[in-house]
Image 1 (cartoon, rainbow, N blue to C red):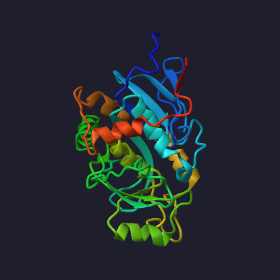
Image 2: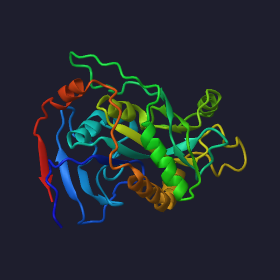
Image 3: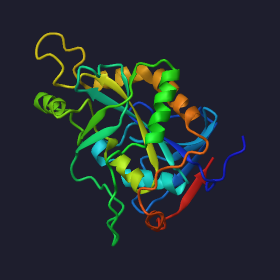
Image 4: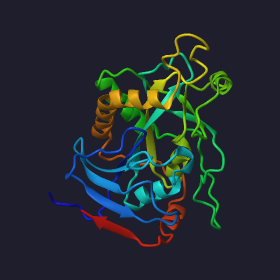
Length: 289
């Protein structure tokens, strides 16, 4: 195949969550290694064609789920994608349901988050410059409408909106925490959507998230008796494996539906974004076929 130049811009990226570590068939994509001012990304980025679009793919947890959620180098991941020209990110995530209206098996087009993490590097503006991100609607409205249209066309079982509580991890919630999140108005719980979304917004990249509910977390599972939907790592990965065809079909539908003239919101002064992207990396961009 004709391999793309490692510096040829690519405008759409997919960030794969738990269970999604490869997007392209072997031998059909180009691997690009990007060194960033923040260290290496979770994995090398692959660029290929998916659903008729040229797409960059980055597995959030690394190629074999080697990066714990609280240790993921989110700044490096987003900077690396931005350096390739990405302006739209479609991400997948595994989530637990903390509301009975969000049962296992449901896909969710997330629209809000509540941050309950701690100690994560969550801004690019910490080197002598200040930028205040307007984050009332953290996920891009155009991309969210695109996802809803795509999932409707697939006749999918999905929720068009949902608030996710992002916890620190890697442990799951206690029963009290899970019930607290529900009482606070959350629908689902996850460990990785913060600060990924706000970092993308700081670089004027639009994001849309497709969450798959794998379990009933802790608060919705019964205290005694049948606990088939109570969260555990084994349950999460088993249900993700079963759901991979649905998740990939949904991602493909979203990719096909993203408008060809899509333009991300300019939430930060482009000159400030350019200054962040001009920060030197230790070794630049490497390329391997």
